[in-house]
Amino acid sequence: MAETLEFNDVYQEVKGSMNDGRLRLSRQGIIFKNSKTGKVDNIQAGELTEGIWRRVALGHGLKLLTKNGHVYKYDGFRESEFEKLSDFFKTHYRLELMEKDLCVKGWNWGTVKFGGQLLSFDIGDQPVFEIPLSNVSQCTTGKNEVTLEFHQNDDAEVSLMEVRFYVPPTQEDGVDPVEAFAQNVLSKADVIQATGDAICIFRELQCLTPRGRYDIRIYPTFLHLHGKTFDYKIPYTTVLRLFLLPHKDQRQMFFVISLDPPIKQGQTRYHFLILLFSKDEDISLTLNMNEEEVEKRFEGRLTKNMSGSLYEMVSRVMKALVNRKITVPGNFQGHSGAQCITCSYKASSGLLYPLERGFIYVHKPPVHIRFDEISFVNFARGTTTTRSFDFEIETKQGTQYTFSSIEREEYGKLFDFVNAKKLNIKNRGLKEGMNPSYDEYADSDEDQHDAYLERMKEEGKIREENANDSSDDSGEETDESFNPGEEEEDVAEEFDSNASASSSSNEGDSDRDEKKRKQLKKAKMAKDRKSRKKPVEVKKGKDPNAPKRPMSAYMLWLNASREKIKSDHPGISITDLSKKAGEIWKGMSKEKKEEWDRKA
Image (cartoon, rainbow, N blue to C red):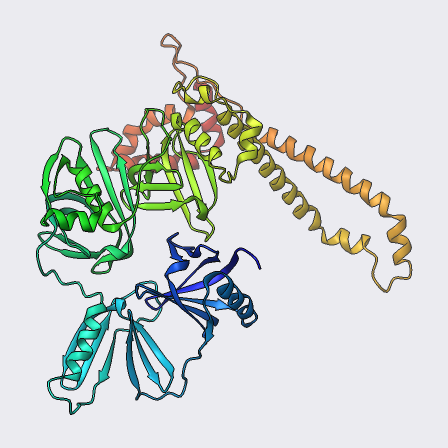
């Protein structure tokens, strides 16, 4: 018997959405990792109470129940894998994997059973459908009727909004079956009601997404953001990760809360809650609980009275309530000594933090990329200036992220970091061939030799030459092929008896003629280009002492005849006078014109 079993193409059902991931069964327990979010569900072997195998839409499924009432559903197994799983459960978990199919009769009359956090509607001994009560957002009652409303999941293609149950009246005195049904639902439902006192309240915290200042009220099971315009209630079960990131100016801190599913404001979805703190802000905090309750609930992680920096208090309280680790930047240090890199993403400037297991960009829009979902990264020269470069990331799902306008002084540090994390670098071969010197690259002097820039220039020249050659060749081929007269004379027809002989005997000659024609054509084109070049004319300066050019014969005649034309045509305009003079000169005899030519 193998120590572990692994299944790669398995789906977990979460609020109507099928999330793909990997499932691993070991002696210690069962682990499922979501491929999209990276969230890990860990079920200890000692917590398992029941395992059920049944046929579902995606093949066969596995339903697991734990001691605390949680239900986990995994689909996508093959029928042949039942024996392997059954033997594994018997050997390592001491559980019998039961086969139990769903009822498909289509009846809507049956029995409701409450077991742990699950409502099961059964017909006989077979379940028709099951509702995890943690998905219920509201429960209302009417006469003989109970209505359940559900939390919506944006990832689900089709969402179930509500279900109504008709509860028939019973003859038992003092027990209302409708109220009993509703109480069973509400005892396990995830209905967020801001009742009772908050554990603590943080006033007027600056929030970057969603933008504004909010009072944060900390309740035992959820977080309440109260602003001037909007209110948000965030259950701790939706918190995926916590980040505490120092600002580049070393005077501020970001506290980032990753949410799945996100909070909503109209059609806008906020997957991250980002708080900005000043390091100088201090606070004294008193929890609204007695010391025994604090010790029992938080086991030393919190005390009734605490004081310190505001960001430390918020992060400490959130860590204790959410029960998740806080991620901070690792060993990376940029050129300026900061643990982040200034860059732009989607035309907005922000900060990129290289973490131990991923990258996070703050803040508009926030982006978190895990190393295990990265297909490759790429370093590209900036499009607008040589003083910066772009850092591109492509995920295995095909999503591309481009962080641009990164100062080139950061190149060496970022390249070393990516190389140390063994990420696939798309242009690694190009980089190694250049043998880049990080010291030279880190220098901001534009005049110094830049190996990367030189290589880019050489590649640009090669591309231009190839483009010119290809355009010339294509032009020549087009010109040569368009010779209708020659084609008809040289090419042998199919019905010609000497077709094969002529083609074989003339093959060598035709090749030589073709080369000769191309050479002559190139020489002719070069000659034409030279002949088309106009000589450069240098304009000479005018000599002020040079004699004036003599007047022409026509101008001498016009000066002598102007008064006579005016007297013959009184009131004539200057334009008409010029026209009339032209007509007279044109009709003048050759002898008279020669007389004026001699005077000129």
